Image 1: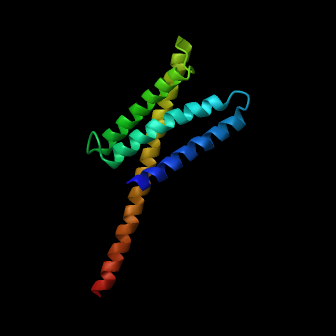
Image 2: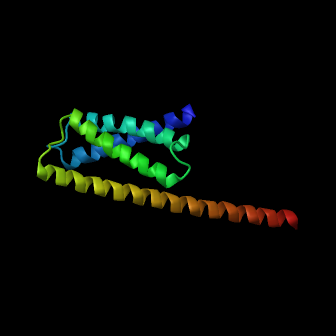
Image 3: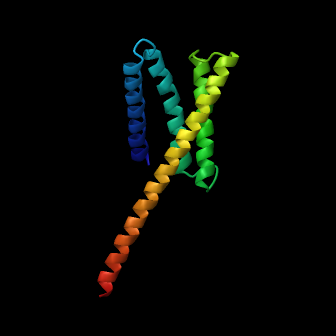
Length: 140
């Protein structure tokens, strides 16, 4: 399990670095190293929590309940990290932007889970098809 955790952790941090590089290329004057620290500060606890939630099937046997818990935890850590790094401003305009951003993050995450489910379903169909072909060959 440690090997799987380490591999997925390296992938997650790689995704954070790639996102940081892309953002720094797009908004070079606005993105600095403090944002990378913030992204890593969010990425580490969220990855730790989500990996063990899914790997150990914590909180529920239903995957969508676990996914909802992980999404909620991610948004909570993002908000807390923003407060720690002093990147959150608590005025009305900023709160509206944060709410819209949170809704967009939720929609993108749910869509990603949906796509992953469809890909997994397609892969299972292919595996079942290959197994049934192999079984029919063995019977003949």
